[in-house]
Image (cartoon, rainbow, N blue to C red; front, side):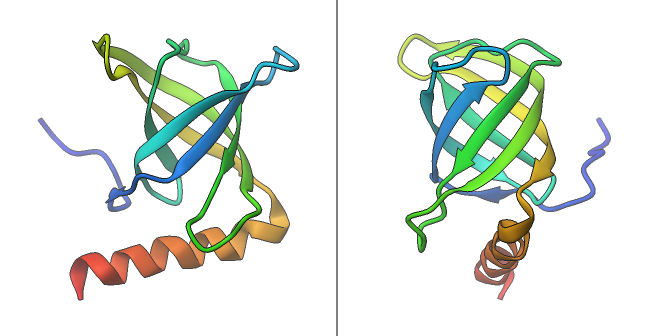
Length: 115
């Protein structure tokens, strides 16, 4: 099987708050499993549907204010009753004022992994 990813996935356990775009007031907590500058994988108690758009608050370890982004769900797979669903999605938008900070965090994690 060919790996079609263009960016290196980096493991993380960063805290996420997830809100479906079409459901006001519902916020779910999750933990990132890995990420790239283009996508995020995470475990969730909720089964997200392929194509569903999610608003995500991604909390970086060194900042109290989250990076706000939108993501489209690419896949969601049930793992176990304890872990819930393992989900992956493509980031479609990152708030402009936090783009450089998110890119720096990705670069920092790359350096930690390879150097």
